[in-house]
Image (tube, rainbow, N blue to C red; front, side):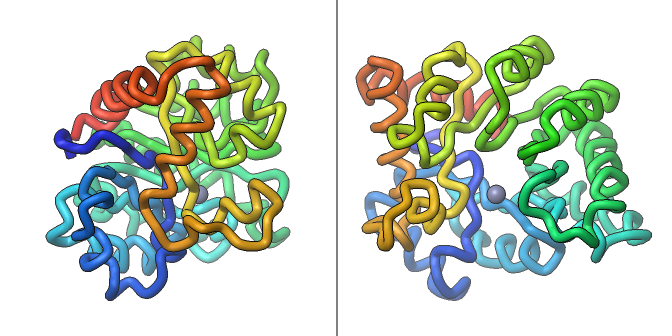
Length: 255
Ligand SMILES: [Zn+2]
């Protein structure tokens, strides 16, 4: 991981195509230069990512239950511990107030709190989804005492971002940077020691940028375009940005 220049702190490899093709994909020269945290939606997707990442030194599988799937894991929290223990990172976890199915709502908090507790117990870094429930997520993270937290693709206002910064959180900038005023504002606002980059899965580009087809669709190297746009929004060179994002990524993950 330390030999990479670029890091995608939050991706979903389902979007790269068939899981079986992933080891071959990572062997291309450009992809060898990219470190990936492969987020889980649920237990099966964690197991698939862990399997696909075996032998890929730059791709690390995270274990988590996405808030959209929380209802499927009600009462099954005992299963989480062994996966948190074996995974180097926890994610994607959190609360969602915007796109989650209604049946997940009564169970999101219980699943989130349990996984935060375990991430603290095993000192795992965490990637958190906060969309539409930014204030509640803040209170829960603060109460949990979890130390190494990255807020993924943040949609809250600068005052909310400041609270997370004061708590010591990182932020991963999403693929809408460069095409959304809100994302550009956040990219400029964040101090350099707290910035990470993410794609949220390469096919999020089409959604984030409101285009029909992305040239990056099945490529881990899509993350370089996020770096490029974030550097432009911050008025910095790509080299400058990538150097400090690397430092941040390594200290966030401990990898
Ligand atoms: Zn995600």
